[in-house]
Structure formats: structure tokens, C-alpha cells
Image (cartoon, rainbow, N blue to C red):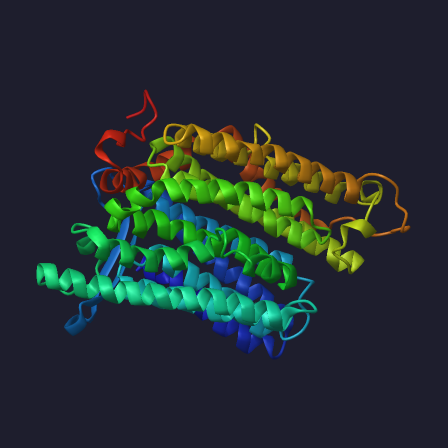
Length: 503
């Protein structure tokens, strides 16, 4: 029941928060916090039971029940090391999002936490579902409440941003639905078994023109959500207009569903077409790294700047997935987690500044370090993580991706590495313009409180731990990544994801 509880607890918590929020907003906040705390305990229990599972292909936890047997639809949930890490990230950032919204959200609080918890439940379902019909159900479930989070509690252009987010994600999701149906019928025609079961479909991957065409349906949804060039334009608008919790969930979690889809579905289900497409995807990833970094430097809106850094950082994930290298795949997973933590923290800081200053315009800031030293110190730590400073988690993720991608294309890897230089420029420019220099506007603002400090301290500990000792995370993901590598990579590129000297 633990997998079902991971989804049911936030669903039920959201309903209770909505009902209690009609009478007292504080009750809604505490209900959301309690629901995610229960989920955190469940995740820790799963991790303690067995980490990433066996390398031979077993799942750490699995639930399989018939749902619509006439159509080959089952209620199939399972977790391995990869999905366990992402579920843990979901719950962790969900707790941070609740704490970040504690004083920001004062209107319709119950409905706000309802939408937040249901979005998180949908994300957990995406990471756990192994029936493609069920996967698509959760994929759609997480979109609608996120639309309401932006449209109701966002900033001045929130309706435009929410509509743009919904159109991009819904249109690409419909293409994925068509691809799922095509895969269902093509597999049934070839094998006589009509099923949406991932474990059966991955054993008989499609090849040739049909496989390539179906793969593009999946790619459409996952590249939009990642986001990759040129389907990224919804992201800066959604980030800049969303409330703080919405930005944290968007950057830290929704983007990761696209990365997860590439690793879980595209590479194992379509190994031949994916290998043929790998050079183009490497080039697209490198272009995203450079483009996102350059656009970030051009922004004066703090949240748009951080949004464009996401385009840059997720370019590394795209490269890591299609490099077909064990090192690059490890780096992609580490980058997924570290980007969620560091960028989530930057959006929390942006929300804290907006709550105090009522502006996101960097040109109106300056000298904030002297009046808010704790916020300034936190901003420096996470800006350094964003630029890839050694000793922090982002550096290891990007370094592993570049090392692995170099084996596939030295030229593209060298070009992508220039994004690290651009990241240094925009990160240092942000710190200099906002926190140093002269306080020309005469700001007199309170520094962070205990609740805000607790949330940022947890994020800081996580990003430093991943930079200093990432081995538990890598070991947890290793069996799952080995399975992806064995099913997806050309035979001459299959290697061990185990660290030398370790069993």
C-alpha cells in the first residue's frame, strides 16, 4: 500500500486543506505540511528498505491490479532507484513550497493548498506509473491544478502566462497520447498482446519508420516539458508570473518529468530511433545550454533570469540522456536533482525579495547585503551552485555530463562547456547588481525569519551534501540506469555504472 499512499495522502490532504481553509487559512497550511510530512516518512521508509533495488531488474516496490482488463489497462505502480530519487525530490521541494507560501498566500488559502497538493500527487504518479494509460492520466492530472496556481495567485500577467503554459503542455500531451495509442496497436499487431504495460512494451521495442514516428510523439511532450529549444518560450512567462510555490514546483519538479520521460520511456522503448537521433539531440542540448545562459544575462526581471538558467541547465540533462554514456547518464540524474534544489532555492529567494520589495526589477535593487545579510549569504551560495562552483552539487552533474558527452562528440561538448563561462557571468552580475554596490533606493527591509531560514537551510545542506558526497544518490540510481543503458545504448557503448571498487 505504500505506493498508493504516496499518492493518496496528498490527494486527501488537498481536499481536507480546501475544506478547512474555508474557515481558517492557518488550518490549510498546517494540513498541507502534515500531508507532505507523512509522504516524507513513507519515502524514507522505502529508501531504508533497499535503496535502488537489485541490478537484475527487480523493483523496490510494485503494485499491480487489473483496471480495465478488456483494454489491457492495469493499475501498475513501481519504484526503482531513479523514480525513488525523484519522488523524494518531489516531497522535499513540496515541503519547501508550503513553507515559502506560509505568509505569501492570504486569499483562498484552502483552494491554493488543494491545487498545490494535487499537483504534487500528479507528479508522484508520473514518476511511479508504469502503465502508459495510467502514466498519461497522472501527466494530465498535474497540469490542471498548476494552471490554477498560476492563473489565480500569479502576478499581473498571470492569465496570459497560465494559458500559454496550458496550451504548450496540453498540445504536446495530446501528441503523446496519440503515440501511446499507436504503440498499443502496433505492439498488439506484432505480438498479439494489446497492453499498456511498460514492462511488456520495453521487451519488444519498435524500430524503423513506425518506431521513429511514435517516438516523436513522446519526444514532443517531454521536450516541451524539459524544456528544450525551440519549445521553451512558455517557461519564462510561467515562472515570472507564478507565485513562489508555483515557480518552485515548475522549476524543481515539472521540468523533471520531461527529463524522466526521456530516460524511462524514450530511450528504452525506442533504442534504434533514439540512437539515430542522438547527434541532433546533443546539438540541441548544447544550443539550449548557450542560449539559456545568454538570455539569462539579458534579463532585468529576477524571476525571468532564473527561468532562463533552467533552460540552460536542462540542456545538460538532454545531452546526458542522449550521449549513451554511463558517466553522462549519471551526470544527468545528478543534474536533475541539483538543479531542482538550487533553482528552487533561487525562486524562494526571489519570492522573499518580492514580498518585501514588491518588485522583481534587478535594476531597482542594490546594496541589499548590508541590510539583509542572511538573504545575501543564501543568494551567494545558490548563485555559486548555479554557476557550477566545485564543492556544490551542480558542478558534479555538469562535469559528469561533459565527460560522458565528450566520448560522443568532442566539438559539441566544447561548445556546451562555454555555457559554464556564461553562467559565471550572469550569476556574478546578479549578485553584484542586487546585493552589492550602493543602496540608492534607500531600502530598509527585514532579513529572513526563522521559517524562511529553515527552508533555505535544508536546501543548502542538500546542495552541499550532493557536492561533497553524492555517492549514495549515484548508487541508488545505478541499477535503474544500468537497465536503461543496456536496453537503449549501442552494444559498443554499454559500460558499468558501478564505481570501481564498489560491489
